[in-house]
Length: 186
Image (tube, one colour):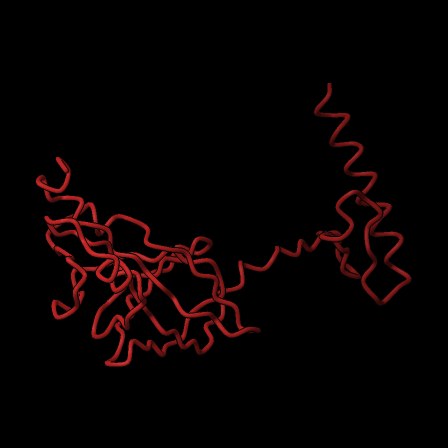
């Protein structure tokens, strides 16, 4: 009984819609809760449903970053104040690759710094987690061990990339090797 009633209501509605469009040549919007998405085409009783557009792909734009690093003192003897200050002073992260992962889209960028610690590339706008990769220059005094997966899975910092302002320098900090059992005991 309910099916018959529903079919009758739909039939009456469709007939009334087609009668109201016979005298008109333009599309007529249907007065319903979904009026923004349904329109009746003249000489037709089939509603045209406009599907929402797919998510617009994020646009990449030119970005230039200067990457610096600091590190902990990870030696055995107590460091001097000068040694601690030297480790805390930002230095250029040269000839090294970092991974930038976009929070929103999940897009990953593997960016390699030049001899001046500069990365020039195109990136999407967004907030990024920065990770180490196995390609960190061994000539830097970071104490980095590329075999340590704990280091590779650690978020070093977060960076916001926007097209309308200059991105500040990115400074990462190298902790003492988290895979070194000797360091864990100290």
